[in-house]
Length: 336
Ligand SMILES: [Mn+2]
Image 1: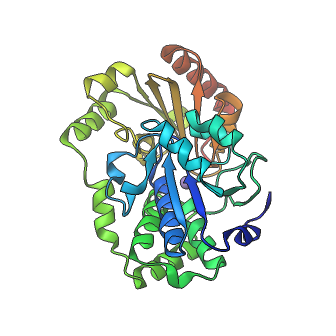
Image 2 (image 1 turned 90 degrees about the vertical axis):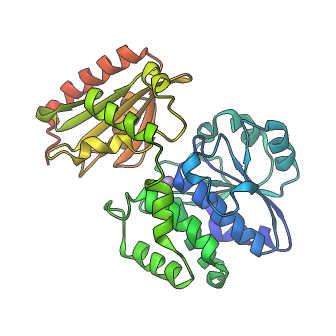
Image 3 (image 1 turned 60 degrees about the horizontal axis):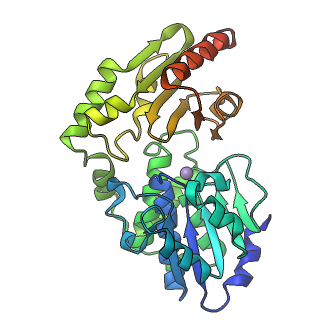
């Protein structure tokens, strides 16, 4: 993969740019995709922002989101958009298997592929790019990309809102250790450029339906187990639970973090039974590496303190398997 600055040569003159992100996009995925889209539009390019799956409701307010295509809903239109594009930007993922049904489309595409991402261990399928696991968010890296191009003055309130969204969501509202001084300097710059941050917080964190709040209450009361001896917490949600509460995309967002608010818990896991399989999310505090944990046991990965995985076993078997692994980790003492 060549350094990202070498892709600037491909951006001379108006181009058509396909911008995509991971399946089940979160705030950083959609924020970075739309920040880059707004920037390229201002530079006189044509853009095709594409989400592999539906954009969750809590991001429905993002400026320009109506320009984004959903591959699951309109695969043919996405294929056409890709065919007419000169290059492809891949944001907030580093392995084509993270775009699910779009994987073949990206693999077969012959256009240069540019990576901007902060997950560990990128696959060598990108022509240009930057991969930096020390960055708070892909949104911060899009900000860096615009600055590297010498275009700080192009950043306006819309781009600022997109960047703020992903940085806020990926840093747990600026509290995770990855929140560096440069993150705060970037936010200061965005504020000076017209960013209104409070309404964004309201849109994302204070726009729950009553149903979603009741679902959270049920999950915390009935579906959370705490293992003080292992400094761990586990939440398990079955397909039946999701159906009963008419759970929608995004409703389970952030659930995995709740056990970490209990004193002594350093490792939190969420196991969800979905129609397309069993999904696991891992979060940790301190020096327990959930990226390695997810890779070793659940065909996943991500970041040091936040990762995901999957299981081909049944829901019940997965829970048993997880608890067995947890008990084997006991001597490691997650306390430190
Ligand atoms: Mn991210």
